[in-house]
Length: 501
Image 1 (cartoon, one colour):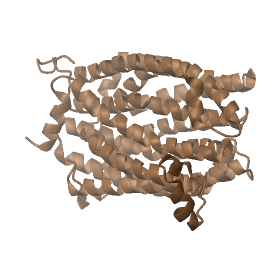
Image 2: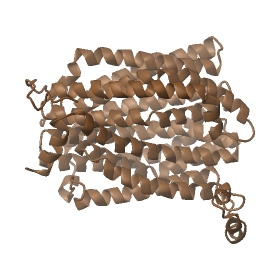
Image 3: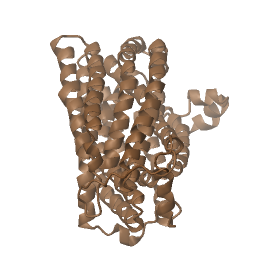
């Protein structure tokens, strides 16, 4: 039995619950660690004042917008690797992995150049005022991130390929080291040594006041946050590449796998381009929402940034389980087990809907305290007020979105990326942006209009996804060896396939 056959059996035979949870748990941990990059930046930059937090809030949607283009292609690697693993095609797994790495590398260079050049203009479009401190800080942070974009996408590729293979622990271990480095370097790079609260918390005020403060380093502000984040991501990307070429992680790349093959690249683009559009749509929607909220004021923008970051943190189990569903569905459809793929989605949805009903209740109850953790200093009271409204309006829709993410994970795993893209366009542009614009501008509801627009779009997206999931056409979009879409014949459940969850 080959390594690919053994790997496929983990998810295509036997019970579903334990394999799904063991795959999802490291993904949740990795996503938590990933989010800690932004949380650490927000926390320490918040010590500089609300203007600095607003600068990062303006920057994130721009970075996310251009990163999402490469992110869609990395997700294509997950889909193609998972389906070839389920079909037990050893040679194709390494080939697809190598082609994904080469294509995303070239794409990241192009995005870096474009992002660096257009950052000032894009930031002005989402609401910053050129010449102001907020605009200048946002430009600095954004440009540094784009200079180090390959480090970010390089690790994303490594993580995506291993996820398709079914290994989510190795990327998690790498992320632990990278985040630990960032957490240590971030406060020093942002605030310097003198009067840095980090040293007070560690009981090392004397060291900061004497030996370290003597260097005269007073911190780089938001520029330091970007440098610390890019540097720590670079370490994880370098180690990940070494593991792929060493063969220590199941997938083993060779020089032959890196020679571009037009047919495979086309397949990656065919599957990944709709995902890039989907992710870009989400990012652009965030940018548009930021611009709408900016009409209310910079305090509302800061609250939107904090609320969105906290929502991203709470959603980590949802995102992680959605990724696990993507892998398990992809491998089972590659193996021709359509009924098992469908049951995976239903099981994951049931678990997460219950969990997020509880999470939403706690968030609504403690919303002011949650927002207050991220913002101190001048203007904090206004930011907390806006942020509290955001959480109390949006959090009740989290349970609904849990079902959406599980169904969307299934569409991704099946290769139905055009369907997923269409749902994203409907939710983000057909409803969220329009509804928010009407409520904020037309009805003059201020920030509340934006918050209600977000909540309503979450419900619309889930209802639309459920319609297509129940119709079942997504089960027919498996990517075959020749690149065409073809349904695997529905097999009669065997005793093994009918094992309970």
